Length: 406
Ligand code: FEO
Image (cartoon, rainbow, N blue to C red; front, side, top):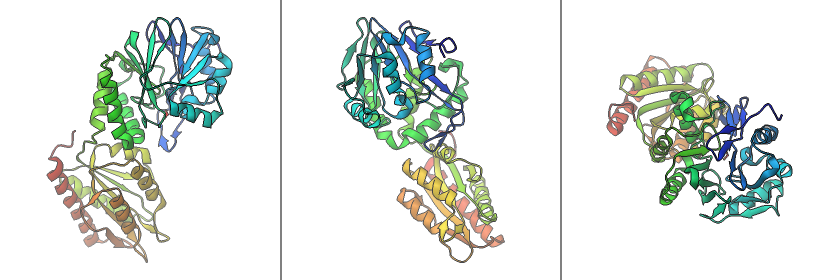
């Protein structure tokens, strides 16, 4: 592989030496529509450090990129900011190839790396706030627990004012254009929001703590180098501002209607509810689970004020695609939503009640009793659906005003 993969210069002291995965589409349940990158960074001080590694199967690519700068055996230390296998899956292979003196990780990182790979002697725990000297360069490690795993930490390179931020500030986007000023801004905005919605939303309190912790260091941030997606060198403050905002889960006058259908009855109900919502002024999006992915629902939920969910009853249960998306978004713990449940049934109305119960456990404020229709909705039933949409729209207006924009 040497000779076909090159490192990318970030600063005079830092090279990106990661791997680009154009093929991956499933990231533990998250649809990575644009693939991803596993970012690793080479810091070439008097001593040489490798920050994080790549997913199993991509070690050759990373080692070849390293070799375009220096002999991999010149690496003195590896810093593992995060033990999840997308960043550590090739660690054993990398240690064998580079023979570093030490692999640094947080205490919990060492535990996780031992549990995953049986590593021991080479592992060294760093204290929160500890500075590692590369001779002429200093790296300070700061723990950011639960951003994304208990072991997570970030590492700051003082001389370059550069933060290796592991999962934080990342996005799933496979690209050769590895800097924020080289990628279409709308693509960056969407993928960064999708990443936050699907990975960090339930950990927002920890994100806030991590941001505060970095702020307390009183350092300037010229560059943010995350473990996924482009490096923020043009406007790193932009993504920090977005995280500060997203962590508060700001909501707007917007409703999403998530549903699936067997014989189009629940779909007719969804469409009538959608018409009611839209006519009441709510920015409205219908999301049939036959053609939408759960991670896109999570993304839309980042700023929606209302979550309306419908399913037909199948074998006394809500339709399974709707159970799937509800289970997924419940785990992401969106807060401050209003909502409602609906669905058609044949000989036993169960789904809409089950959905309503699930929404309540998610602390969604229900604006109406579950709306049920036997078999096929007629004119009267559709009128009730439309009115439910109007009722939700009125409530959204009361809470968030007329504008659908944040
Ligand atoms: Fe990109 Fe939590 O791993």
